[in-house]
Image 1 (spheres, rainbow, N blue to C red):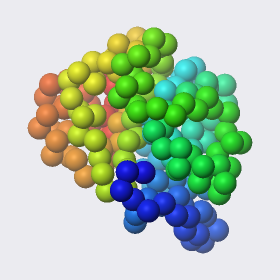
Image 2: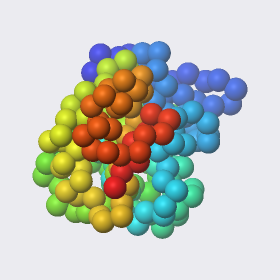
Image 3: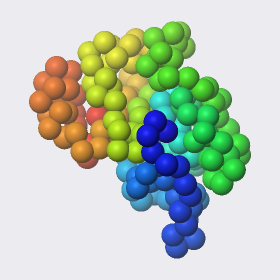
Length: 179
């Protein structure tokens, strides 16, 4: 994580992967928190996750859609090491890539049914997620009828003022549901 101290915090039988004071993943996974909003209601065959952390969302997807093929991208080997050591990240059937999400999307040629953008890093959030160039790149690698789900914490004003008018997408509970 860029500027956040990584640690594991145990609460009521759950292990939380923390960056600063912000929980990024929980093990075992739970249907609570924001994670449940990043699991599609439509069964995806191929999933791209931008931001893995401890793998909570990947676990929830595979629990609901066991045949889904997940590619996960995270730029932090440090957080992935913590997740492997304390949250059993290695047990998740997922192709993990260590890369910057923005660079990865630019070079990606595969198409996906579901793209999840969860790039929160402690208290830091890359505003570039809402840039027309990045969103257009996401749309380029999205299969027809697919979905893009974006975790946009505390950015309701930006979604309402910038993203929604430009892309005319439905916005629910801080998640943008695509195409």
